[in-house]
Every structure is written in structure tokens, then in C-alpha cells.
Length: 284
Image (cartoon, rainbow, N blue to C red; front, side, top):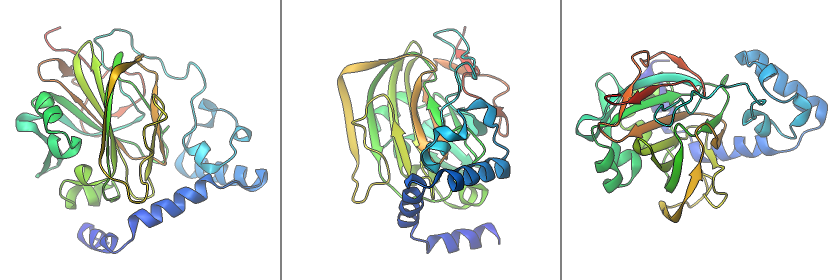
């Protein structure tokens, strides 16, 4: 099926209802034998390294397995308060500088930081800064980590559609990342303001934050745009868990202009892992 035909077909799919149904199924309890069979079959299908996580007997549901933690010491966090690290295991989709507040989605397709963040003031503060889009496939570890030390100053829950995040959708759905459900975590760091945007997709409707259990889980019926700024920002450590995809998708990082220079190796198609350095202080 061509990309345009796929998008036309997906336009008729009730993506929120489908995602909620699949999500409910992944959170439903199964007897131990069938559950372990399903988890092992999934791991075999996608080449998941089970040696990195707790044994299959530790999970009560398939959803717990999908959002599984790593065993201690499985990811080294590059040192340095001014060395941003990858918040996820994944592949670089696009990256660069947000000239004019625009980010590249795919060749010939861009969108604005303001639309992505649903916050004009925050978008203006980050306009012209470094950014990177990191895609998580089913094989990847699906927890999100803080790229820098500092504080969480607030969050934005932005309801939206749940288009798939695949090659066809990225090429043919204008403003895809600014249309899908997403959770924006806003940080103050030694390198200035940073936004970590967790973007949902079809089936990948739920994003859960760990730094504050009051942050709403995404893909809730009747959800509306929510914004919260902490009177007392929440201190966080570089490399600590920010949250998790309950099923996986995409993370977009945005930094203040003139503060971060991305590493030369950070190019589309490059694999990254949690804790690996992805840049440094501009001019440093």
C-alpha cells in the first residue's frame, strides 16, 4: 500500500478508541503461562534483549513488560552537568536548529515549535535552539530519562489525534507531531530551558510521568489542554527516569538558542541509547 493510501485508510480508523482498547488489553491480567508466552513471542519477534531487564516472571501484565525497567548499571550516564544525554533508546529521525521556530518533520515538511508545545512563550524562548527527534521502535526500551540535571518547572498535556508515527505518516501527515497527543515536560538546567516532548501514536496512547503522579496519563476520554507550572520546581537528576510510554513512540528535545551544540554523529538514522552524550555546551 502506498503512503497516501495508507494515510487515507488510517483516516477512517477510530484511533483513540482502538488505542484505548489495545491499552486496556495490555493492562489486563493473564495467567502466568500465556502471559510469559506472549512476552517471549514479542521479544523474539522484535529482537528484544531480555538480559537487560527483570525476568518475565516479574510482570503481571503485558503492559508492565512493555514499559519494563532496566536492570541497574545497564546504561552508563555520561558525566557533566553541561553534557546533554539521550533520554531514550531509539533512532534519530531529524535534528538541527529551529530557525524561525520551525522543526523539520521530513524532507519538505516542517512544523512550528509553538504548535508542538502549545505554549507561545515557551516556543519563543526555544526558537533558534538545537532540537532532536528520537523515534522508539517496538524493540526499544520504552522509559524516558532526564537529559540534563536541574528542575522540572512545569508540564503541558496536549490532547490530539493518534496518527501512527511511521515513514508514511511522517511524510504525508502535515504537522504530525503537533497533532498527536503529547506530554511536554519543561526543565531548567545548567544549559537553560529544555523541553522534553513525549509524543503518542496509534496504539501508543498512554504516556506516564514519574516525577509527579498528579500529571495526567495521556489518551483519556474528553481530555482538554492542561498546563501546570510548579510554584516550587521539582529537582531531578540527569539520567533519572522521567516517565514511560505504555507502548512507544517519539521523544522530541528542544533547547534554548546558543546553549547546546549537537554532536556531529547525531544525524538521521543514527541509533542512540539512554545516557549517551548527544551534544555539549555551545562554545565549550
